[in-house]
Image 1 (cartoon, rainbow, N blue to C red):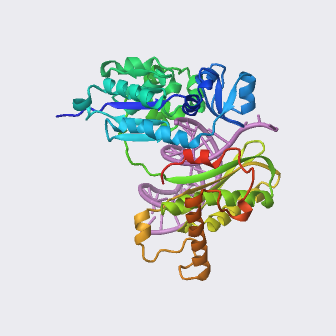
Image 2 (tube, rainbow, N blue to C red; image 1 turned 90 degrees about the vertical axis):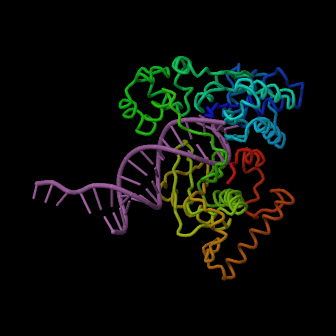
Image 3 (cartoon, rainbow, N blue to C red; image 1 turned 180 degrees about the vertical axis):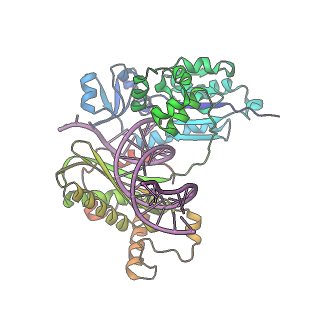
Length: 414
DNA sequence: TCTGGGGTCCTAGGACCC
DNA sequence: TCTGGGGTCCTAGGACCC
């Protein structure tokens, strides 16, 4: 029997804000924002005033004087996000989680047991509402891209089922920016060429789209506009990079400033690399200046590393080289480190001649001591929390505007 | 005190190899 | 006068997504 794939895209509405309204009934029906310096999530009542996530808190307050800033229930976000995804898993093992509040599920093989895809979606929505108290929107379609668009159209707290017989009618009337991969820049380029709907994009020649947007993007969007989406559900996806960044406001571009910040960022990353035995071979830093222009520098090493101090020293060297290349830049506004070319853990463990983390030979005293120190600190943090111990110079009171607990919500499994 | 933080993918050019 | 050709790796930058 042929199993036709039927994709659900489930997306919790205004997730962090909805959780806060769930936990505190006094906030329900009111414009609220999670965050402070920057809006991390806004309730639909706040969105009515134009408040959007990513927006500076001050701007949000201007738009909505009665806006209530709240938040901070990070463990609840994680618990409720997991619980909602688990409801999906009751209907199929083919679940691809995209983020804390969003997932695809292929229920094509589940219809005998649980009914039509649309019925499953209704049940999931009702259960998430009844069992968790949260609104969730779901799109149902034959392909991932269409299911994703359908859930966007369904929001807030809705369900849209795309009939396989009328897919293009549904798709072609919608604006291009609903497509996966069309952001502000691409939208502008398309608009400059008179293309504002997905139907207009579909009617344009593929060659013209590739000239306008580049080969890969042009091809992809042309295919998606005709609802040709070959992507299948991927249940297990490992991260290909791990990074951390910190906005600094405006700080002098001196080593005294950037060294402790980079040490802190390196520690966050290296600890994750060690936890999953996935050392990195490429280290990339990003320096953003006061005017928001950003510069990156990368180096690929002959051997993988995961020691905090090694990662930090490399990042410090790279940032130093950036600043030497831009001697007129006196002020920096953000520092970031990204680790990529991550190793395969199994291979790493079995490699008998594996180099020590810091590139020193395993037998040397310095290499041993450094590895031991990292592992000891990892163990203490595992028991007592990330703040329990830290490299002295990385202990910065108000280093970041976003708490580390919040950062970890966005981390992918390595 | 305008503009967070964690990710993925693509492009273009240069180095280097055969 | 012209000046291989393909493949892989690396770096820097950009766009996008949640």
